[in-house]
Image (tube, one colour):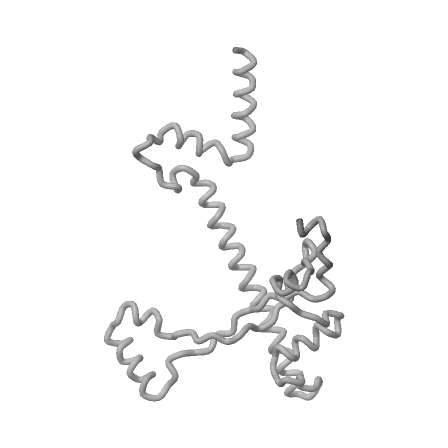
Length: 189
């Protein structure tokens, strides 16, 4: 009996240290078979941690997008001032690919494309950013859900002569030939 008590004490101590199990055990003891507890009561710390992780990822994505935008603007200005020649296809992505090629990144593919080709991205490698295919983004998306007199007038004016949709260029994450290695027989199994 004493050994069981000591083991239980050690388990409880380890659970408190990891912050993962403590609240779920307490909530499970309160929960009956007929009344499931909401996840926010069962694991409030885990829910908060997930929210913080999501927010951190979104902020990192915004920063990477801002860096890509700044690099694209520098390349555009360099072409305008004739410091560098325009790309062969006349696009910003062409300029970005030429810049990456000077660094040795000659072949760019998405993660799935490399996987289909029989390669895997090395652990810890960061994606190279390019602009994706433009999408149509509706400016009046919020106005359509809650129409007001002002938004109705704005829609009418937009339909009269202005385009109701703007182009949105998403970020495309690719990896280069320097960031991958062939998949071995072990990894495929």
